[in-house]
Structures are given as structure tokens and as C-alpha cells.
Length: 502
Ligand code: HEM
Image (cartoon, rainbow, N blue to C red):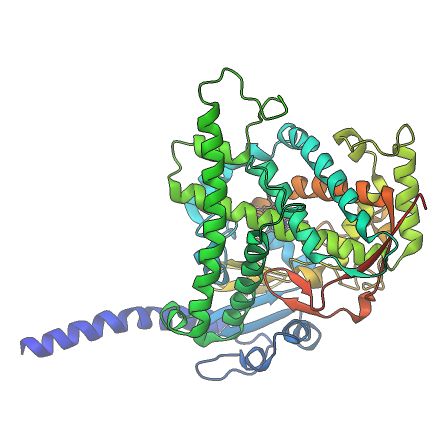
């Protein structure tokens, strides 16, 4: 009798979550199963086409869904219900909502790397961290980073001299090093100088990020890999852990270096660096000063901001080179604007005041963010029902907003694959739907690093493009993408530089 009771209890414990899930999904099913989408199969749900996809054609497979089924598509990723949306008119209901702010279940694949830092976290912890961290991106703090952006940009432009007139070369590795140097020196207050003195750890770190990103998408595509227990037992689960160890130990070293630097300065009245300049309070110093943050929370946010600040800078430069290297007329207009701003001294460093005058470069970069939308989608898990254009998106479902499609919607962007910065002329912007352009997301969960990114990238471009003309070997229409955490060109990017003073 006792044994039977034990068996029944174990069964009830195991069955209860499944029953709850069944009841929850039954209601969701009622509201989403009438929406168009791929055929459903047991266990894998609607993931058959993703399962069959290769790393090389995964992005194309996902892109093909919207024209076939849109603008609302239902997916069952195994037992996870998802509605995909593509139109600015629909996305705005999610962006504007103060309720639809919990990250979708996809983000749990990022937990091993980012924990519940600002990008992947939700709930009261996210709210508290967002409030504490937001002032670290105030324009005054960004102004104080201006000197580093300018110095590093000049260093990078001079470093590129070795390619001057030498034909095409693959540029991603160099961009990766400068992006790392900049985020670590600005946000973390630690000087690396990987651009000139690489010791190999930068490449290991960058490869680990790419490797981990590849695995995240394997987990997205394959419902069997979603289960943490099964995943950890597989070969790629072990590989994933290896990448995470590399990433975490790199970032832990950054934190340790800054802590030691702060300790060294502790007894000095005024903190100075080796050149006698006042040492600035970095984003990391602010984290370390928080009583509320334990070591784990500091690490989570350092991992989050290293991710947010590095990969996106690499993509920003890569795709701007792709665009300008294929559009000499647009490149010339950018250079004419820069020549005008720096008429007093063509070689002087960029200042925050200069950035405010770069209207055309601003339009060009926005068009890069639209056209090559390298953060192609984002997701929320709904904790309340939400009605969008007559369609009820039920509590418990995930919603993905496909930013890439938002940015290529022919109703808002005629000839959407054409690179045309004039789309960002003020009168054109004023006429367009306000949510037709959202590379940094929008609303309460928008990108905290948006202004940092704009200043960083514009400073780099303004310095490089004053010095060089750029050509690009790849044609935009031929580039194939890996769909990982950001979209990456499958064969890298090959550019040629010619000094403008030649
Ligand atoms: C061109 C560059 C960038 C793009 C296109 C970009 C894009 C985005 C997008 C689309 C989101 C929303 C993600 C989601 O909802 O899943 C986001 C969030 C975020 N980004 Fe960025 N980002 C960029 C640069 C940066 C930089 C440089 C940093 C930090 C230095 C940063 C830090 C963050 C953080 C912390 C969040 C989470 C905000 C929150 O949910 O409270 N980003 N970014």
C-alpha cells in the first residue's frame, strides 16, 4: 500500500507540470492555431523546416515564412507557442506596452553566458538593474568617453595604413580587436590594446562568442536541444560549456584588473592614469560601488555589456564598409561633409560637438541599421492577453518581432533592399510610421547602449573615412548570412583601402 502511495505521489509530482502545461497550451492553442503557419508534427511542432535547415541557409528559411504566411504566423517550437509579427503597425502594440516586457523563452539559451543581466533578464531584478544602470549612459558620461573613442579611432585608422593600396583584405579580425579595446577601456576602465599587441586571448574570446552563438541557434532550430538536461549531455552541450568558460574567464580577468587598479588608487587623493590624467569613473566602477550588487550580478552585467558593446560595433563597421564600399557616390558625400567639419585641421580628433554636425553620416549609419538590420528579431513572453489588429495574442505565448522585416516592409520603404540614406531625410522620416525603424528596439526595453553605439561608430567612421577611400569585394546582393545572435556575412568582408592623400 505504501509503495503504491509512493508511486502515485511520484507520478502526481511528475504529471502535474505536464498537466499545467497542457491546460495552459490548450487555451493558447485556441487563440493561435487558426493563424497560418507551417505544418505541425508531434514532438517537433512546426520546427521541421528549421530542423532540415543548414547553418548556411537557416536565415533564408526563416525569411521565407513571412511572404508565405504573414503578417501573423503561428509556430510551435516543440511545446513552446510563438506568434511572429512583421508589421510596424503590429509591433508598436508590443513596443508601447508596459506589460509586454518579459523576455521570451529563447533568451534562456543566453543564461549560461549573460545570466539574468539586462538583456536577458526580466521581472523586478531587471527593473531595479535598469534603474541603477541607466545613468551610466547619460550624455555627460558619454562625453567623457569621447576622448577614448577619438584616440582609439585614430589608432585604428593609422593601423590600417599597412593595407593602403595593397588590394583586398579580410577586415573582421581587425575590427573585432578595436571593438574590444574600445568597450573594455570605456565601460570597464581597463586598457587592453589588442589592436597592436594581441596575445591570442582576444581571438580565443571572439571565437568563443561566435561558437556560442552558433549553438544558440542550433537550440532554437532543434526542439530536442531545448531541454537543458539533454543538451548538457550532448557533444555540443559540452562545447557550449567550453566557450562559456573562455568568455567568463576573460571577463573575470577584466573585472579583477579594474579592481586592482582601483585598490592602487585608493589612498591617492586624486586618481591619475599613467599620463597624469584624472581617472574617470567607468561603468564597471559604478557596478562595483553598488551595495545591492553581489559579485555574480556584477559579472552578469559585465558579460552583458561586453556582449552588447562588442558584437554590435563589429557588425556596424562591417555593414557600413559593405554599403560604402559599393556606393562611391555616397562615400564621397560623407567625405565632403567630413572635410567641411574638419576644415580647420583634417587630422584632428573627433569631438562630441563634431558628431552633432555629421547629419549625412548619421543618415548613412541609420540606413545601414535599417538595410542590414543585424539584430534581426527580438522576443517577448506575454503575461497578459494583448489584442493586435483584431488578433488576440494570448497570455503565455511568445511573440517575436521581426525587425529585419519591419525594416524591409515595402509599404513603408519602396524598393526596400536599395541602400538609400536619403530615406532618413527629416521630411521622409516625418512621413513614415514611427515604428518602421527600430534597430534598437523601442519602449521600456529599448537598447541602453544606443547613444554609446551611435557615438562610437560615428567617431570610428569619421576618422577612417577622412583618411581612406574604401572599396568592397562583396556585392550586397550576393552576401549570405549566418543567423546567429547577430547576422554575420558567411565569408567575412573583404575591403581595399586607398589613402585619400595619394
Ligand atoms: C548598433 C549597435 C546596437 C544595436 C543595433 C543594438 C540593438 C539592441 C536591441 C534590438 C535590443 C533589444 C533586444 C531585445 O529586446 O531582445 C538591445 C538591448 C540592449 N542593448 Fe543594444 N544594440 C546596440 C549596441 C549596444 C551597445 C553598444 C550596448 C552597451 C554598451 C548595448 C546594450 C544593450 C542593453 C544593456 C540592452 C538591454 C536593455 C534592456 O532590456 O533593459 N547595445 N540592443
